[in-house]
Image (cartoon, rainbow over all chains, first blue to last red; front, side):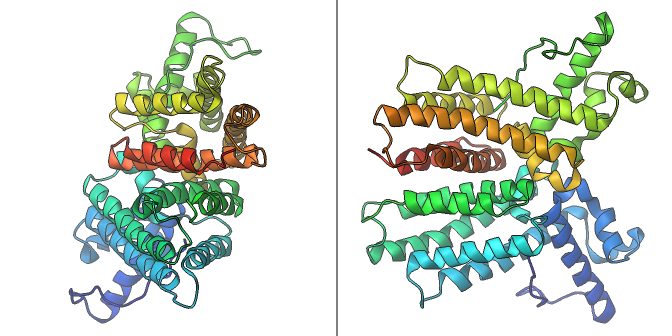
Length: 212
Length: 212
């Protein structure tokens, strides 16, 4: 669940800033991603993000039109980074489909362990805080879950076509249940500073799948 | 998941304040429970809680020794209120054991609907924010989940003894999986302002139980 987003510019939108400015902007995005996976928006705020990269408060609007635009870009960057991570596991043809899901789960466990369970999921954190966030975040967060669900449903459908999941199963509904529960597991892993909740939920999910 | 805690004083600890002071203290606790189920600690802060009941900021420490003590009391009050709610459903001998769990789920859905999905679970909200909260909160939040899990496991064991769940099933592990996933469902219901995630997870959980 940790992030290490690529430093490529946004697809289709050339960076407006050049050289040092573009670097500073990228540093702000990375610091923002770090802070939001750890604490969410409310507990950290822009000040902590600026402080991590030694950017003076006054110059924030040189890089972003508003805090809301900054937040939306962070959601989009995290969503894109995470979709890529999902694809690298769920699209791994060397493994049987359900083993691909297990491979993603093992990677997510290792990722949380690497940061001593201090970092969770940016989308889950902001989802929890939605009551105190700009309303424009809602659609972006929901769309991200829908995207992850679709990638997961495709993997479950591959399992179904290979007979690992019963033919009558609704793979879309199963993928939805996975992401609902998985976000709960990430929350609990952060709370307990332990991989236990992640593996407990994964075990329940995999053993609860309707088998062929 | 909404709260309406009883106004009885804490068991075993007589209130230190009398009359109007005790009333004000209770108002602060209730406002704190409201705010923390909506937004968590970081986004709201003490100021908003005091503001809701028109208590001047300076007098907070007249009622509580510290913000941390206030937070711990809110967790304890919510945990106690919620354990009572769980018992009223899971202990309902008029229903078959799994129907008791469904009854709790229906009540939780109605509770979130009543507040237009703006209020989630105080324990889930604070769990998500743990990285920015006093470390003493962690043990209290974890203990609350353990308590809810035990009550749920007892219900699942009753289902097992009546043949609704397979004899080989580990009811403790199933109860743990329920609470991990349920908190994810509450988070998602708040994000989507919809009961859909709650019923989706409930359906997956109930159909994933190992049947006799």
